[in-house]
Image 1 (tube, rainbow, N blue to C red):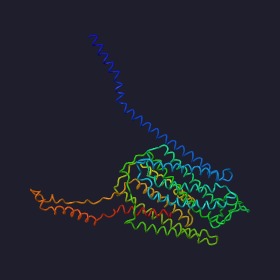
Image 2: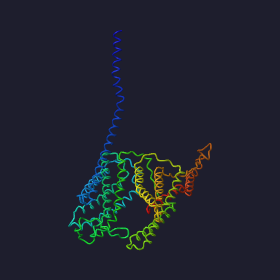
Image 3: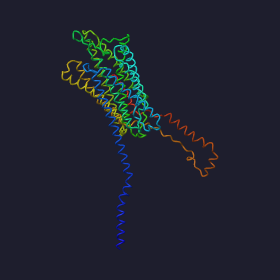
Length: 522
């Protein structure tokens, strides 16, 4: 008995010892799964953090160089800034070429694509602004060549490098705007942040150069500035000191030409920055196949919105041209004409903003009776659209509120001040309504076309018989042709009665087209 008790105790001890091992073996796959998930999470956080650090450092250094080169008292010249930009443009172009070649050679490198990212209008705008930026760089090269004998050659090299960069980046963003990269995630994140920061530094440089062209005032011997209409004599930014003269006679023509192309280069940098940010957010993202809707916008069955918008744009351009011509006249005697031009300009703006507000209210009312579901899926493209919309409207909000405060504080004396006050109030209302309308539309599911149901009659069901085989043998030709004719006749019947565009969708299209054209002239 004692020996049996010892054996049972030893067996129980061995079972207790082996139990943790068995439990550990059963839990081992879960531990492996959790550990691999932790490793992936750490790798993703590491890539985000490293790419963010690269972007912040490049932006701060670029901001310091751009700010320093804008002041004459700081010993940072324009060539110093351009050398930094050349290095950034070369590194970014090399990475984009590497990414394009690697993705092309790697089989199944991009499995998922974001259907909302890189729409046609955005890529088309990028190409248009890129072409105009290339023209600007060509004019810069032609103008700077005339100063090579007395100025730095970096000013000629920089537009050439920027021209190549625009070509490479435009091709890169056109082809890979929708990519959700699943390989080399950390390298791709760092490269996209390099692209984003490079475009932002180029944007800061272009904005600063355009501002200097408009605000640099010469020092006259009498130490006074002579007014002409509403503007001062402005000396545009030169190429060094005044002793450096151009070697050919076309420098002034090219200088004026590329000066007017600066806004397109600024817009190109902003478009490229937005697309690079969306690519960075989509790195490692898994997109559902059913979430990608191919939405086509066409102006079929839409008439009132485009016509009213085009008339508004033509009237706004006409009043703006008259306003500019009157304000730029040298004689200060005829103040009544200038007041009438200002009044006409303000009345046109008030009418435009009022019509846009009314159309926006109509669009918001359509949303109330519309039963489309709200989109709950998180999408970086939609989030960026909302952020850019709100951020871009902040400037106009600030201008409008400052105008309201100034007019109220001064008592709004005179009809021009009252019109200015009314314009400021209406602009605040219109911006608030328009932002709500656009954001609400971005978070709605698209309209789905419901096709009519086609019913095909089965003749075998309509003519039952006991001896079906004999009937089928007897009427073989009739039964073969009957279904085909029935289906053909039904398809022809449905083709004649195609469903028209839903009235709610048509009204929303009219409103959107009118708001698009109205924002062009406001």
